[in-house]
Length: 472
Image (cartoon, rainbow, N blue to C red):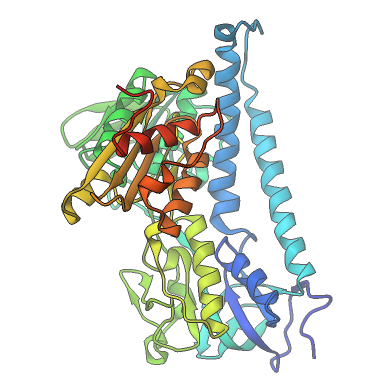
């Protein structure tokens, strides 16, 4: 008996229903796994307690990039005179920016729901709890059974012990996407990827922005060179940056007063806490989950190289397991777990998962950073090419940045970093090169169209080979 009507949403289930695969969570890991499994003829359900699309679509990647693109258009308009285009005064209509963001999120979420229906995937609404190796309780709906289970529970906002988010004055990254006005001043606690992206955004919209970062540099996941350059550029934009600094407390006055461990008092209209995210699988597992082989370590579900838990038919993917908390990593995990369910023998390899940061300018990388490569590999060779020497970047007025190639003496690609215009698009070529194992010396022979920003990649590769063309 089919538990739902027309493979759509379900509110009541037949307890005898059995799926080939049940997926808990509909973010970029869960829904991609569902579509992939369905197209391999498995009977699939996806269980979601909130909005289809997960954090990425509803409170992360998509809404933030909508805002950031609006900010980039504003910057282009305000700089139009440099290109011989007179457009007059420019103003911000923040309500339209919000509407555009909301429309994009709704359209993409509706698109995912349509894909699930078209692929005959049952979307079950409610909170899930694993009862056994083949049993799941869906709150408000009853129990289902499944031959295989994928946990794709995602992550949650990490909060501070000493500074509590009140969702009005002290905001989370979720809250700040729903504010109605641009704050005159904004202090961001946390100078990682999320913090720096919001700093770029609200500075462009006119806020006086301050970043407080506990470690000794911004975006510590990137190279020190990229961190230093980003800090320099942010400061040029008028953003105040404190590193090696702890935010001690926030006084709820008007304006808010943020006290640091080194004694500074910073005033702001709003405070954004963005110190990272944590795995969110706790409620799914429930008591006794370890008895069926599903265990957690510091909140992350423990899996092997096939993304399988201690229970041979239960897998976990995305933000609720170890590894980078990235939407595209979650999708990669979802497909890999499905392949292993289908009988293939695939092992996780995150060495070709790109990191992308949508600051202004963008930063993107794959593989080892310069520091990591030098620490792990003897005979590391580094080559760089500046955006300033690119004809296309010069014409666009986007000359801040560099491309860095990291390899060994034999030409094996160890890492690749781009700091500059279009970095998050350009990194795809380096991902393919690393995945395919092409030698840097052979890669350097690939022809790049002229004039394009992608030529910075070719120039850096030629510099690595000792044959720089436009470099000194």
